[in-house]
Image (cartoon, rainbow over all chains, first blue to last red; front, side, top):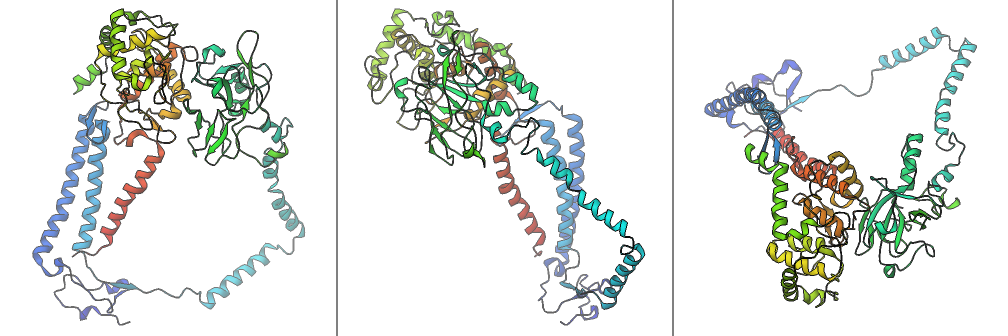
Length: 354
Length: 261
């Protein structure tokens, strides 16, 4: 490539001399197009005024933002089309300060683009390979470190250091062990397969925590429900695992509309109890359409037909929604007949061996 | 504007409006027991007769002459006054055109005619009654508790901020931003269209008031930060960022990089 020297440039090129002392050299191959501001002094002055105007306007907006901060009460709400009911102070501060910062930026860029020297340059770089003497120096340093530390000489230190490094991952193994062996010694497959539901356990509605009677639930009704005593277990365990497994929904439909169930007589006069946890990846579902008896999972649109054994009629779920057999106790409250007959929620590796 | 919005949010205005509306509907309905909605108060004999006339003209082609239902419309026996009032007063019934679900529109009947229709249907068979003014007075209700109940029972379809959402096959849960306390109550006890029923036994009236208070708080809540993007949550916010904001950033980068004329 041929580098132009500054002397080859026309004297009236508006600062087009390459800054040769910085190590840059202009490139001749790229055809250079002059800007309007390079050729027309009027345009250059216009650009100067433009940049100055942006900086001045920025000052104005800073003053405005201080004024907005002082003058607008922070609880004032105003209606602005598109934005809706908004906090006047927040919006005014964000707008004025944002515009002020933006104007400094656009002014600086406009200055650089229109007025600062505009010339194509190449920055020379040295080769990516190190010089041989640098390589030799590095190797010599390494050898010297090896000799001076005595790593080869002090056998005991070498062995204990290797031992210490070998011990280092042990805590990881111990900590991660709890992922498959729990403190209570229970097998994780069992934990995932059992919920709080048991024979005679009353069904309480979530949120109100009232026991539910069959007559409370009209045809078309829906109740998000939990087993009685869940709150105490939750308190004791300090987590939501019990709730996550035992959450159910109760729905009531006309008994004639129930086409099939997962077990003979698992409903109670048209009241059906299903797990609330999607069998795909475990989202809680209560999006129930009472006319079609469809239960739609909002996460991935798996759809279950609760009138037909909770069968999957659409979406990525692979298994029916597990049904909980229910009945009433002697006091007339809805109760579970037994726990779920299969693990609720998403699949896991050992599920089919449970 | 400040003056108007302050007036609009006064709880007594809502109560007064409701009392006025209920007065127009008929004093009988405002004396209904709030514990036994199945025992619907019956309208006056004139209302029932007037309602029957309106019913035969406007509704019977789909719901049958004796309201037992046809292929085109469900039975209205036992749906109760709350259901009829909700469907007709929100304009969902009579149906404008067959579709995935009835949409809310300008009601086709005036309040007196609606009262007559409700009285007629309620006279056929007992069903959930319309709420009394007391049932709708949510001024003492616990908004936070209402939020908990809303997220357990309503948010799955109507979205956590009450903006509504999609159901299956073109059906949808409507936005609650325009809903009145009476419509909210009537929808919960009657279960219109796809919506399940939330009876006064599984969701007691006190809890319904809390839910109503929460919805009203959502309706009135301003958006202090500015653009709320429909309060639809992180998906919409992310989409806005990736599409609108990134486009603006790319445009800025192009402007910075392009050579001046």
